[in-house]
Every structure is written in structure tokens, then in C-alpha cells.
Image 1 (cartoon, rainbow, N blue to C red):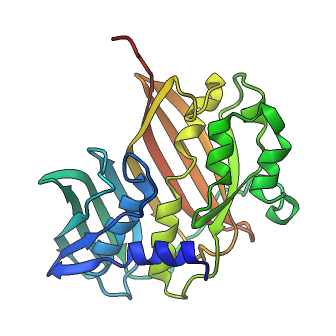
Image 2 (cartoon, rainbow, N blue to C red):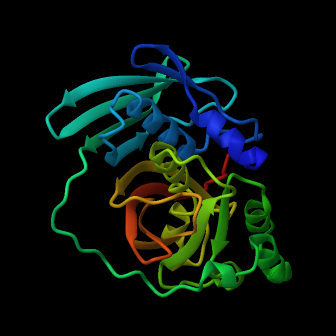
Length: 289
């Protein structure tokens, strides 16, 4: 296991302060605010620690209320809404400086058999045929914006391989769809709860950017003020987050300075293992005094 993945697992291993009360910390990355995927993943870990391991999560719905301060811990308060015969519901509130910065509801279900179908996995280049991301970005040369190159070149616990970087090179409106392969940068323990938390962390990566493809822009543009507003994730089938997963993203609409994006996550066998939806702020910056 690489050091940066071990650091992610440490961040997800929350400190228990009291019954249903946990404390999490953020890595020292020099960012002005906490990465949203981290808060989603930590809140999921907090809630899951109050539910039997035989009843895994199947969905979560979250709202980002305030930007998180990476310099201070986050307190996660779990509320036990319901423990039924088949389903369990939890609500989690993340608190900093005495204020709620995030709220999430999570539903858990006993594993059951039933009818099954799924959407077809879209065509995508095999991840093994794609160059390592740094090489892919370097191949774009001077046409790649510096902020984009820095993002994809950064060492992180989640390895990313965009299926294409054309939209960063040709800044014109395009069909608002994109694909990226992702996986943990090294092997993870076998505990399914860890893989669910790691995928929750990764599910907030690159998704909001899909809302700007139709406008020939990206969240990396200095003229765009972007922030995740809410986040929903559904777990459909078992998976491993340390094996390549295709994150197929699209954006059906944008309006009112908000963009809406959807994601389907497939394993290499073509199984739809999770779905994601998110609305985010994509407001043009107004730097006037």
C-alpha cells in the first residue's frame, strides 16, 4: 500500500469520541477548504459504524452547507433515525466552529435477491491502453491549461485516467459527456465498507466539471466560481475500489448558475456498481470592486 493511500485510510479511520459522535481530520494539502468527497466519505464511515456489518449502505443523500476548514477537526454527529427489519436509516451532521457544514442521510438494507437489470456500459478505451495520466497531460503540450495539468499531475490516493483530454485542448462547446477511469492508487483491505467509503470519496472528483462541457469551459477556469451543493450516491452491486472503474458522466442541464451532473460507475466486466448525481454552483466570477 502506498503512503498516500495509507494516509487516506487513516483519514477515514475516525476517532470515536462518544456513542454516535466521531472526529475526523483533514490532510495538510494547502487547500483553502476541505475536499467535499472527504466529508462524504467520513460521514459514511461514521454512520456505518453504528450499523451491523451485515446490512450495507445502498444510498446516501448529502448537502454541502459551508466550506470546511482543513485546519481544524470535523465533528460527525450520527442520529439513529430508524432500525427496521430490513432497512436502517441514519442522519449525519458535520460540525466545525459550532456550525453545521454538511448534512447527509444514509439508508442501509439487508442483502436480498430480486429482479435485476442495468444500463449498458458505454464504449470506452480500456484503461490499460491509456497512458499514465501525467504522460497523457504532457502529450497535450502547451495547449493544456496550467491548472488542469497541475490537477492531473498531483499525487493523490485515487488514480485517474481520463478517456480523452480533447475538451481541455479544444475550448468549444461539446456534447456534455465525459469518461474517466479511476481506482485507489494501491491495494485496499478486503473490508467492503472501506471500498464503499473510498468510492464515496472518489465520486466527488471530476463530476461537476461535466456541467461546463456544453459551454466550452471547465471548473479550472479562473472566471468560474464552482462548488458542490449536494451529492447523491447509490450502491448497486459489490465492487472493489482498488480495481479500475469507469466513471461515465453527463450533464442534462444547467440553469440559475447551477449545473446538474450524473455519473454511472461500471467495473471492467460491464456491471453497473454505483450511480451518482450532483448539483453544483458554476457561477461566473464577478471581480468588480
